Length: 344
Image (cartoon, rainbow, N blue to C red; front, top):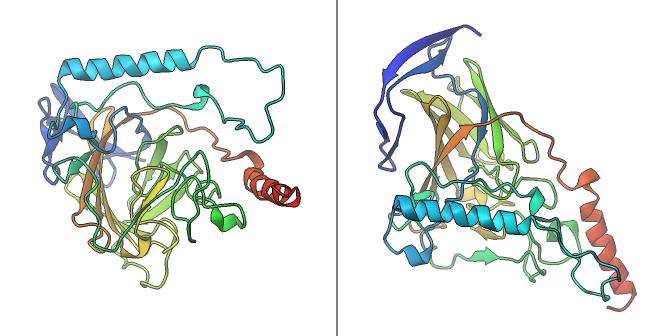
């Protein structure tokens, strides 16, 4: 693809994202690469790992930004926890008691990142101002399940992981069924591992390909209208456009089988039919893509949710096999039938 370049000068924190009121940039002169049609070149693999939590910890109160010392302490503590977790574990010489938990994969498989976001925010959420998911509307519920044991509930199960039982495949979370990844969204929220996506760009379309579950969103940029409201999809119906040097993607028509928003892999609020999602992608440095999402659903929440995630230039994309061969789900159901036959 033909390329042309435009030189822009930015000071530290010199690129402001008005909606969130925060800013990113780099020191000195930087050349913003553009494609042949004149728009910023956003292509490449982008890494969204971070130690900064989605929500501000309650003990931070109204503290929006960490001091340099606090940020360094968080990063050092995370490094030590990872080092401790990587130590050799016990070697079992006897079988576990019947019914004892067998555990899951170890720390080797997690890839949570090593640093907080560039501006030391205490949360990825920038609105509401307290950095937390706003209260729900009266009558709405934040469904909260557990990775440790199933918690009885009703279908559809809208959380990404965990489940309400093993009577039916629809008793399990969406990620367990390999329908949606638990960090790929939309919107994108850091969690666990495989925290990369690749962006492809042409004059008329962009494609957002996630490493987790290899979900791919093809986003038209040609001004075509959204699909009819009765056509609902797992990742919604997305349309994109350029607002200056920012790519804006608006999505609606999410299925009622997914949530309006999930603050964690075991939590879900509302359903997708009332969600209007706006995502903004802005190249603010050679190695940084600023991602911002707006969750607008006043049926579920008492205020919109806005979060910002500075993503770093990544390397290659790797295979994500979900549970290899998708054997995990039938094994869960088959194991439950064995327990029933044994009278457990």
